[in-house]
Length: 390
Ligand code: PLP
Image (tube, rainbow, N blue to C red):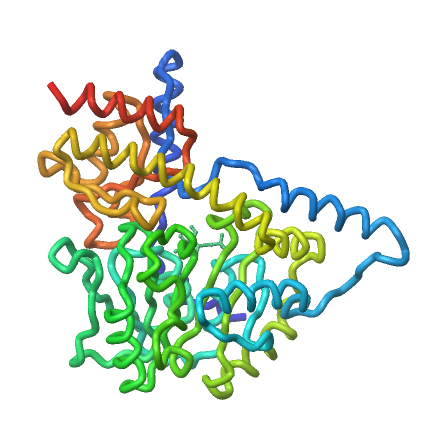
């Protein structure tokens, strides 16, 4: 037996465990202080009633022999794939249902898709970004090169023609910076990928937070993308499915073998998302569901507005929050990400996420999320004002 030694090349991920450790130590030493967490990107609002009703109905179906379901199609039931197809038609993207694959969330598919690619591909990843892209490639022994996302390119790096990449990750709206590419910028990436015979792995987990109709929610809104991109999407942040688990991946048939290969991969290694969950997911795309989830997203976006309004008043440089649940701020007084974390925890008991955990370029930055309750967000921002406005 030989181990996969690529695992030795992974950097230990201390981010959320260190955050949790520091917070629990502080809480133990200061039991009278109320800590407000605006750190982890998990939702707090419950599932909407359209989803809950659909889940209940599906549970009832499982209790009767006539309507009971066993194994379903690995790539998802047609009722959900059709609902997603319709969701895309409304933004002028035409998909065949055979291009839509239902999953238990974007994280699994982002990792699993790598089964389709040879080890010797060069992988291009923006820095900072969602850490899963880097770690899944390191596990497979692939070479990762980084493209810098910085204040001077508005955290939206563009392709460097002198760099030859085979697999390109794009996350728009971005976690953690909240930056969103416009169509022209995405078209430049698509043209770059086409000229390099590369594939773009487009993570659209936060598409539903985009409020400007001119900004693309799907890479397939861009000409040529169906010849060079796979899109990953999730109901986690869109509809509060972080614990319920459902997402989908779009592998266009125009990518040639990749569509069939992904079908083969999924039918071999995956047995599908539970019928009950897929019924709940279908309800997200109903008229009622779409209205209800919009209300929840608006609630989070109102929190984001409260946060950015306060940061403005405090004179703290920040971006994001407009088309994303995340606000990305520059730590004041040249503090490092972790220094600022400690400073907030010790002085006002507000917890955020140190930007350094998302890549080297995240050092000196900090992420706050709008996924908390309105009350907690307002209270946290009052504390910011008391600390930063003298
Ligand atoms: N992609 C990005 C950019 C994320 O931030 C997250 C979760 O935080 C995911 C994917 C994972 O989504 P899911 O819950 O569908 O696995």
